[in-house]
Amino acid sequence: MRLVSVPVGDNLLEVYNNMWTGVETVSFNGRTVSRQFNWFEGIHHFTVMADDGVSVDDYRVEIRFSMAGIVVDVYQNEVCLLAGSRRARRKYEDQRRFQPRNCRRQRQHVKEPVKLWREEHLV
Image 1 (spheres, one colour):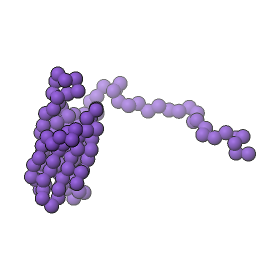
Image 2 (cartoon, helix red, strand yellow):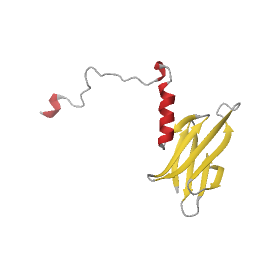
Image 3 (cartoon, one colour):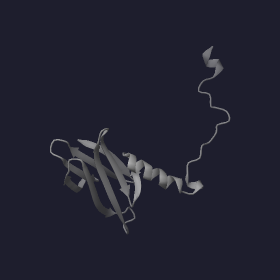
Image 4 (cartoon, rainbow, N blue to C red):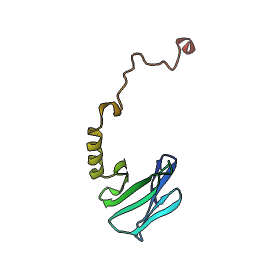
């Protein structure tokens, strides 16, 4: 069963899990990069070439079974891409807290909302 599909740039990272056999499979662009047998917690590490073709990207995929179900955390070069568990969400919030203010998304206030209709169309 496919748990998640995470687009990373032009690439696609997919995580599969079979609850009956305990086999976890991680594929990157359709190619299997990691496969393990785990019942409750599995950590998958793999390295692929970056999009620039010169450097490499280190990925870590953590799959956990909790009372809420199966949760998946995905990290690229120790930066959280997908936070499914509480542990990863706390770590992700800490990363966001220490970013410079200009990197955070700012809310933009709309002075006058755009009308989707005109008065003459209602008459």
